[in-house]
Length: 148
Image (cartoon, rainbow, N blue to C red; front, side, top):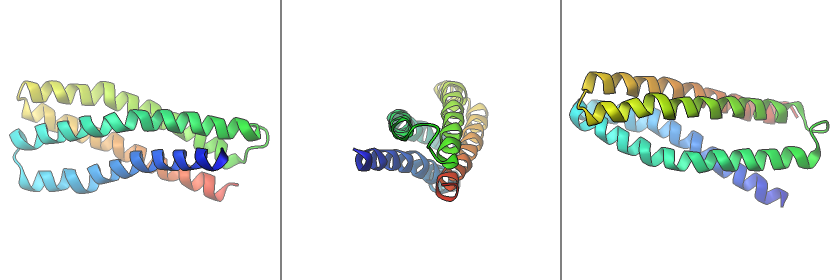
């Protein structure tokens, strides 16, 4: 059971953080170089919609497997890195919820209204929040590796 929990936890983290890295450093940059806002923003919106449909289950898996592993050893016995990962993870979940229900919702509205300047602002805001989450994810991984 422990190996399965670790596998699911790592796979969910890879899905979320790897997807965020791809969006930030590959897709967004290439789309900005190649496409005007009327083509770029609907593309980014649809890609984010599909990606976020994978992030929600990844968050659920991370929460369930993380809690299961933490409770299995007991919170008193868990290394400090586990506690830090859990706390950072909760912050990441909250930040993603804000990103999804705030800027992403407004991006979809802007694209529907063909308001390209507003859509561009929202994509920038989403990228900033995603970058913060990517850094937090790296800190959570570092905590669990170095603080055992």
